[in-house]
Image 1 (cartoon, rainbow over the protein chains, first blue to last red):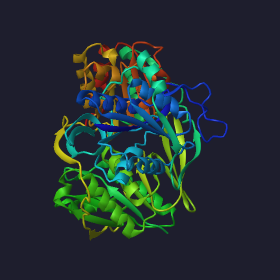
Image 2 (image 1 turned 135 degrees about the horizontal axis):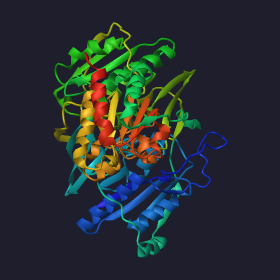
Image 3 (image 1 turned 135 degrees about the vertical axis):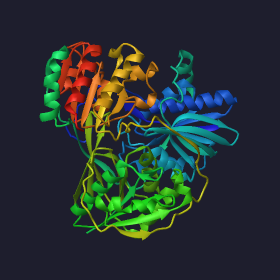
Image 4 (image 1 turned 45 degrees about the vertical axis):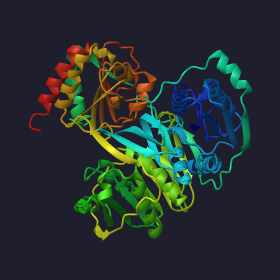
Length: 249
Length: 328
């Protein structure tokens, strides 16, 4: 099966973040960046589908500056066959990113296009679904289970207090939630092989960019925590505060 | 003056709480744009029109009712096409919907169809002349990002519970609308598995009681259930360690890779407060923590903490809450 996986490079989610002096972004000093978690599930899902089916091709795409090449190499070290960078400065407009990807994927002849359900940095989940719309393909968002075979697929999506089982024809776009596949660690052999795999770079056709980051700030600190006491003896005071101060009882 | 279109979310023939919150957000936006109207798109199976009055009560000037047998399920392509067609015809300033599992799917579809800029997971909105600014939490709630969106319409999906639904009764003039069928291949729903009944969803609950590994054993989770029952209509959450161990379903997980919640009250029981968990609940209004380790990081964010054995403290708290709520 010919599968495209669109990935993003994001900072380690456990980092402590600071806002850059310009206030238009985070301070990247000392941050460790890597293939985004959900994108890595998507890469793994693609690799497993093609390993099971035998043959096929897995191509990874990223829109962004040259730093994304590192994450494209990572995906190739996991097993993807080749990579394409659509070169652009970081862009906050998900529709513009979708436009660039759709323009590139349109003539690719893919059976399946995978994305992470969202990226850690903005959790918006816009690009995958918007790309599907621009390509005119059916799209399952946030699939927590995925099966594809001969021209069709089935998936499961978690809803609030329920789950939805769906089926869809191929070609299709699916955005991947946790649970579909646990990403493998690249082997040393994989890392060596990835260095020789083709990585093409070309300008992204973003079109008009109409969403920009005006500023970033850290959320207000919660007031310092207050320990009321130890054991059951503290309960009357807790109940009193829940009634009179927090007013939730 | 500019009008706003709200896509009101329904499931199983009922309006979802986030639909009213989206109307409230739309109302704010319309008022800030010089007093425009809020039009709510109410799409669902036959009979959904009966819910129009509820949307009017929360501030919809016009309710556009679209009844179609297709909308008995989440017919995503047709819903997006219907909303986009209406948005085009009505020349709206903005299209507002909830950032729920449904809205996360529909928002980008509508934006792509309209070739409109979109901001997702919005917690605050402002209008300045021709631009709309939207705040949303990024980097797992650790950074607040302010976005500027230019052009019209824009699509905005609002974080559940970020806008408190407020009653501002309007005429709610009802119009009948037409469903736009999907034009290409579609995703078809084969089954909807309903979760356990009787508790509100984590995203909608005003009180959440959540348990971690400090409960020591799966069977002790019933203490969490009992405390949630004592509070009345509370939801039950869990840490990732607990869901990974299979004590609770994955859907109950609160944290960076699970649900992000902002209830009025969050009670963390036997939860140490790993950064991944804090990312999912630190925006809660009031946080209570019960943990045996007084150095646990959860106490740094807890408004009220009790240091102690959860197996002793929780049953006593359950009894005290029941007593305090007598008569409710």
